[in-house]
Length: 236
Ligand SMILES: C[S@@+](CC[C@H](N)C(=O)[O-])C[C@H]1O[C@@H](n2cnc3c(N)ncnc32)[C@H](O)[C@@H]1O
Image (cartoon, rainbow, N blue to C red; front, side, top):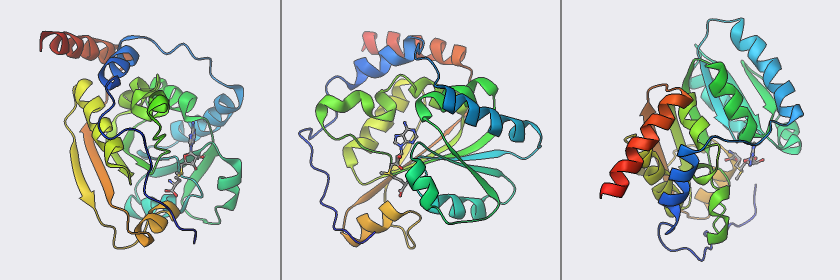
């Protein structure tokens, strides 16, 4: 990817004023969105494979062309590594072959199915998700979307990278509201894992990473946790 990439342009210069309220709403209300048929079919294919092996699972969500999936499978040779993306076009461009799987899914649905199926996920990578930097698009960001609760329930160690500082700060805040500790650091990659990482580094962007090591929780536990956090927030 050779094109120049301007720094993120946003009308938001700090954490969104509605972030806490939106996150708490999604943590305390069940996600009613119907599951799309194509994602359920893709999930069922994967579920059969996951259930037929004793290997732990590592997810590469928003894998794009899947370059990161190759890196991740080298890092976790013991695991069944699965790259997930909604773009058939990007997945088709992925030329990598190796010990991993790709499926085209909408993660708004697939994360819920994975959480409900209790896959043994040890690591979950989310590298350069769309930041949706316009203030009015807050609820399109993963931590401010109804599916956030399912992302927590999947468990494992979450690894996020972005080139927008506010995105990582908001993600950390949302995880704190849900009761988790996070580690946020500026990040320099010696060798780009993804096309977007390469593009951002070539254009001199600062990169950020967040790690969160959370225990696997059920959706029910999340509800309980959220209510506790809500009480704490109201008491503050
Ligand atoms: C900015 S690109 C980053 C791709 C890759 N991780 C990289 O760094 O090169 C974001 C990716 O998220 C995917 N994506 C966005 N929304 C999604 C959704 N609801 N379900 C699955 N994938 C999604 C897009 O198709 C795109 O490939």
